[in-house]
Image (cartoon, rainbow, N blue to C red):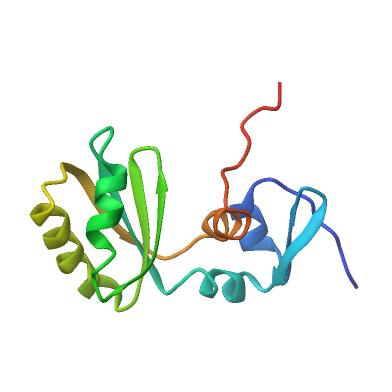
Amino acid sequence: MTIFLTTQYLEEADSLAHRVGIISQGRLVAEGTPAELKRSVGSDLVIATVATGSAQAAAQAVQGVDEVTRVEVSDDEVVMAVTHGARAVSPVAVALAEAGVDVEGLTLRTPTLDDVFLHITGGRLKEDAA
């Protein structure tokens, strides 16, 4: 039996669905199990919350860190896909400090389906079209 569930709450899809399809602008852009889709983003994410106006400098500072495989900037956050999880935090912190970036917070976490959506579509979830 197949049941289709449509939701904008990706946590709900993660917990209820065996397979997930992500649709952006009317097109199916990704499909797989929640675990497969999350692995496509990377093993872990380091999120640096930085002072207003310093996100681009932070992104440049971490480009040379071996454990960082991808960097995305959004407002005052720099999201880095990393290898070796917790071992990546220290070199990232050092690179940011050496570049003089004012870091307000540094977080390590595993990817979510929200991260998958943002990675695949290259954008943010729309709050309100009006």
